[in-house]
Image (cartoon, rainbow, N blue to C red; front, side, top):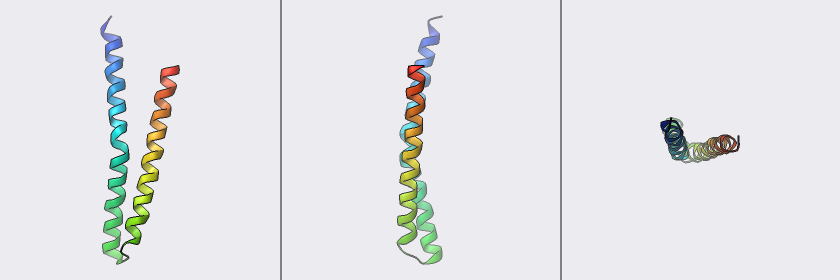
Length: 76
């Protein structure tokens, strides 16, 4: 019976550590696609900047959603 609370703690730690990877991975994906589109369309540096901003916004949105979900689970 004592292993159940410990298992929930490990689950929460795993979820929160994955949240920490959401922001940098979103930014990296945005940079990659922006760079590739700039090379393909010869629009240096506009696509890179646009997709960098989109990656940052996407990363923060996902981060806030995950933190809000975690907060609701803690209260409920």
